[in-house]
Image (cartoon, rainbow, N blue to C red; front, side):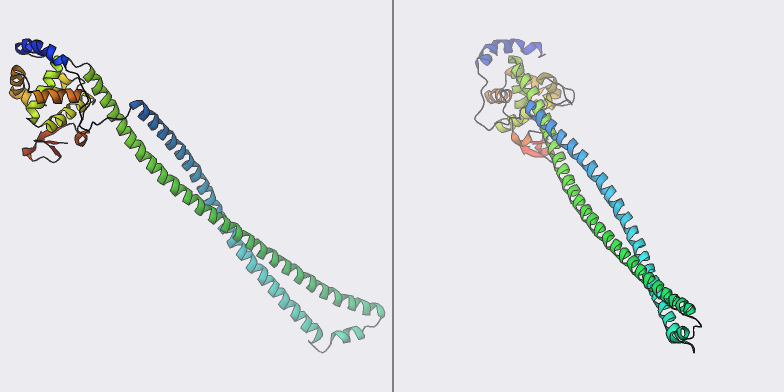
Amino acid sequence: MLKNRYHRMLRASAGILCAFTLTIPANPVYAAPDSSELEQKTSELQDDIDTMNNELDTLSSRLEDTSSRIRKKAKEIENAKLDLASAKLNEKNHYKAMKERIRFMYEGGNISLLQILLTSESMSEFLNNAEYVTMISDYDRNMLNELQHIRENVEEKQDKLKAEQKKLSSLEKKLNRQQDALTEKLEETSGQLGDYTSKLEEAKAAEAAIEEAKNADADTIALLAAILECEAGVSYEGMIAVGTVIMNRVGSAKFPNTIEEVIYQSGQFSPVRSGKLDEVLQRGPMDSAYKAAKAVLAGERNSEVKKCLFFWASYTGHAGIIVGDNVFW
């Protein structure tokens, strides 16, 4: 509550102050988006993020399964290479052995195949010898055909495994591209969610400040005008900037939620500590300060400092946004 020594003055001027209509100034006004719309948007973005995370989990599982199948296929191809090499070696060795037998039977020693047949003592022996020669020849031919068939089957299996491996590799690349695209989209959406969450906090703070402004009485208007004059001097733009910080504090969970409590919070505003605020209240704030206070309560904000909660006198050399004689951050 204000000090008793200037209550009479405020009551005397209350009728005049209340007669003024709080109008929106001609200067640009910073208006935060509606919190309900922002809550709906943040909810939608969170749903999108949850969906994308589920899709990423599915893609990761598919990638892990595909990679496992590729590794397994690579082992099968290596085994097929060994089987093919073995089949080729068996075919080669059998073909070599067959040639050796043929050479022995037809060319080796002093007795040729014809002599074996012609020296048979009986027709039965002749037929038996002829059948023996035919059996050897058939065996070699059948064995060679079988080995060739085994080699061809192994080659076909190897080609099929390579084709499957190529297909799996193509699928792996496709899944990786999908994963990268989805990860990029997820990061982008997470950034948007962060932006909208920040905007939602700003909107709630602005709405809280507007609600406080609606309840402002003559004492509150005079108090706000006095602190604006004390902190910003004659600069109307500087007053609006200081008023923006005060209303930001009203809407912030880090500070009290009324204008009076924000201004009188311990250790915050030097004019309160020095007694300058009381002096201005006793004589009454100047007209431009009243105008700035009403404009702030009507919703006008300095867009440059719309997120600031602190300010110092500019001569202190602090870094930040300079408006009037103060630097804001």
